[in-house]
Image (cartoon, rainbow, N blue to C red; front, side, top):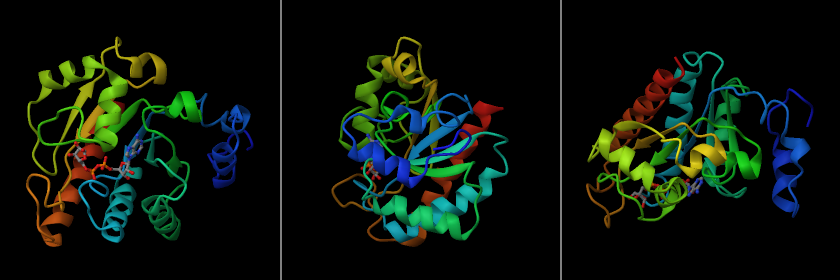
Amino acid sequence: AKIGSHPSGEALEKLEKDDEPDITSNSGAIAGDNIPTLAFPSISTADFQFNLEKASDIIVEKVEEFVSRIGKARLVLVDLSHGSKILSLVKNKAAQKNIDSSKFFTFVGDITQLRSQRGLQCNVIANAANWRLKPGGGGVNAAIFKAAGSSLEIATKERAVTLSPGKSVIVPLPSSSPLFAGEGVTHVIHVLGPNMNPQRPDCLKDDYVKGCKILREAYTSLFEGFVSIVK
Ligand code: AR6
């Protein structure tokens, strides 16, 4: 990739296939620029079973609303694999709406290893949390609490003990956390999205009127939190 470009699908495809990541293809604008960047997972669409078409509409709608409010900062939707349905839906819908691709793009990688494994520096990462703000439970929540170590748990408890659907809480990451030193993450924003999974608390039982409202509130709260950090 040329210096000044952002991650192209081709460059990422290459990273995925090669055993040794080609660091040079991810340098320049991605790694070295220190642009404030929020990496966020697709809230509620895996364990919480939220409809992907509806979620992708909401992500793009909220991103469009906030790209004009974040100055030179960036928003990046992250998922684990190139086969991610939510990434391709969002990527296509964002392109249709001509959203500035230097301010918003999709990215394949583990949100806890974006700098070390993918060359993407993100100072803030979002977590698809549970209402107790507890580690474990699988998905991105388990991965973030594991990678961040016990200091995230302690710092989280100082800010909040529970979270309501549609709300978020900003947790400054102690410098003792491996995520701080290893990945350059300074804040984690926990977000609780709407739950459509009958096996989990507060199931909305397919009520997508409520569900969509709560997912919109969740992204508003997340992006407002990010704006408050970068200001
Ligand atoms: N890096 C990037 N994206 C990830 C990672 C990762 N390491 N792991 C998962 N994803 P989910 P939810 C993507 O299930 O649906 C937990 O148990 C995943 O592919 O983590 O909001 C909590 O404790 C998907 O696109 O969150 C809650 O109880 C997205 O992250 C519950 O699950 C969200 O998937 C929350 O469920």
